[in-house]
Length: 274
Image (cartoon, one colour):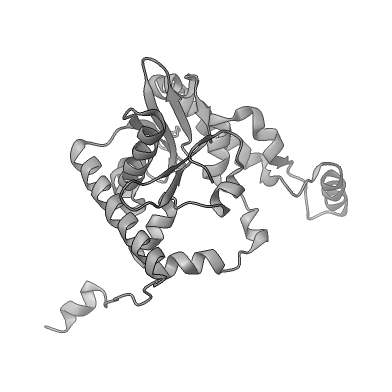
């Protein structure tokens, strides 16, 4: 894969192709053996087709014109009756496609409300309405390790006045989004994506999170727009460099360490001293 930006690589080809991604570095941070395991472990294809609220929300917010191509909304047929089962069977024969993810009308209703909630937030709407590129892929060779890296921003904006990466996150609780940053290492994503953007365009972008809650609060699905503070951005960069260096070492030596240290929970350890 040559260095540069690609606008038409599918999500499947991106994840299965060359280059180390942020999710790969997440595995390296846990244990290099997990990275190798994920490459070879079989996937349950049926489960992969199940609804992912986050994926559907991304589509509605970033590429709504493709929603009907990717998702099939199934009406609420009464499957307890013979006629209902017959109607469902007929509907699936006429509309089903293996490329589409099946969702119910209730799931679509919730997704549409989450979409409208995001667009009701003035800053989120402005970001989502900006001219930019959604689901593009950037590849570059890291100067220090000579490793091919890759990122796939939800949306990138690059013009004379703005350089920005916009990332949509579905969250269970908007007030706990700070915990999600630590749990899912969003600060590492911030660092790696900004690095790739700078390598491609020569400027440092702003990295912005649009967080959309899937849990209702007072009848609404909360929406917030966040940017990381400087301290967490620096920590994210340090972790990105640490994990990329470890990946490069494993790649060079073909040694993928497999033992992880585990310990009993704190409450069990405290009992030892009672």
